[in-house]
Image (cartoon, rainbow, N blue to C red; front, side):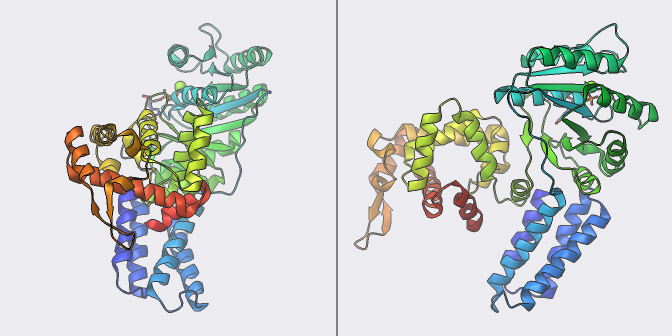
Length: 457
Ligand code: GDP
Ligand code: MG
């Protein structure tokens, strides 16, 4: 989806003039891309109407000042805003609070990824200082408790369940009571699913809900079921009035559009995306960054959050970096440190797509290729002297009389030779570093940084 939307928008950028015909073609492409991923037909038609109306109103008010370049950004912004609307019901989801018990209940059909997601959630909150645990209230599926036990043990979170008790309501109540007494902050109740939406299942959800009184009920939706997601969400909404959605299996060539339509139908926000089978394959979801990433504009906010996660281990260092960013004094050494942080954060392709301005090979290549390229960036900086690392890159540049860079110094050749790379690669690294540093300087601060990054596209 992202690639198609991206292509549609770049064809807009290439169009010499922006008239009705260009807009129509663009909207046709955008809508086709959305339909292909199973976004509800009605929603797509609405989006098209709204974008057209918005652009028309803007143009009539003369906001383009007769210039095509302004017209382009009006069109782009209208599409961006409407795509954001599609995934943003305008409702704030519940946020667990420290120092109290927060009961979270997961519902959804069998195979949608409830048990996996419960463990991921427990790990997510545990990492953020919430004492977390899982209650397995699935007595329907043989081996359900074993699955919870195994994954919870692996994740090092507490769990509760039973091999003998057959009443899911009783287990849920016992488990939650026990963990509340033990002062757990986040208590996640995993429930059973069935293959079909049966009245028996919905009754069970209602009863468990009454027994544990969840602060938040989350519907777990599988991205790969396409259009069916909508009907499922509707049915669950009636029985368990969930307040949040997690869409799983967004890795793979998922038709996530169906699940996106579920947001609009149930007016419920998505809070996370499941992006793999492993414990850490859980991404926080926010509408704007999601669409931004989808359109190839990067996700600086998400990146910042990732960095902050890492920074909790070293808050002083991160404060220093933030200050440097703001003052436009980020050195090559700082930039290298950030790359190393990125490398420690997980699969490169996922992280890289959040960083605006990274070469496409890293963003779209395989993880091995991506991490290879990142490693080469580290090798290159390893061959720099301490003074060079602490600089803003100027020792590598030759400047003309007017102070503008006119070429590279022989230091570049030395670094290329020392690191076993090429002059071109060293040059590239310097370019990327400068881009980041300039962006930060122009924007002065992390919020402005996002805007600057988006403007650069
Ligand atoms: P439940 O029946 O709803 O509890 O579903 P499970 O948690 O047992 O998951 C069903 C299958 O989906 C398992 O094989 C999981 O590994 C897989 N799964 C869950 N979440 C994801 C995800 O985000 N990505 C991928 N690729 N697989 C997932
Ligand atoms: Mg399960």
